[in-house]
Length: 242
Figure (cartoon, rainbow, N blue to C red):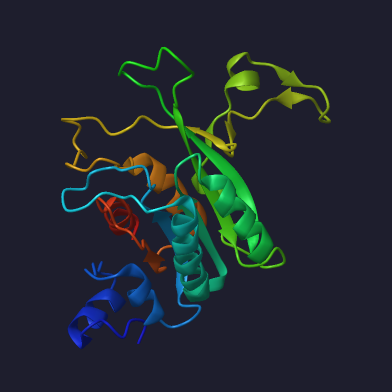
């Protein structure tokens, strides 16, 4: 069985394509999972910046303690990830460099993504306010082949296509493509109050963000793990995409 923590009924439900939520310590649950059993991991971990989730705050005693905890859960997550799998990690901008170095030393960093968004709130008048969050895309080893469905995540190619430019480097010359694979700067709006997908959660991620990640890095029927769940955006999008 994939999870020792699941009942036979839950396991059967998941095998038929259902979503399962486990309420427990994430590291303990991953330790009970079979190695190389997950196709994709999206981890939007606590940021260690004191966000109030109703029953506690995401704060550690020191940066060292927080990074040590990161290393513990990441090692378990990478153990359960298949050799062909991919993991996306989100954390605060000030801590991502520590995670990046750890992943470089032990695994393989595929891409460093910036989720960019505008803010309707008042920005700082003493410094440049933060309008992005970093996402680290990783796999186990550089030589491993991963799933990357580039044709499923195409976006509008604004420069050449909109200006109706001709690419004379091609023989015969032809118009520029109207679609392209996104780069590593992603522009998605944050989830706002009264939006249809809004949940009462301080760090909710938009469905569009997860749609790109899940569409790019998994296939229908694959197993996706979200070690921290949050507002369950990952589960909702995974269910919608099969």
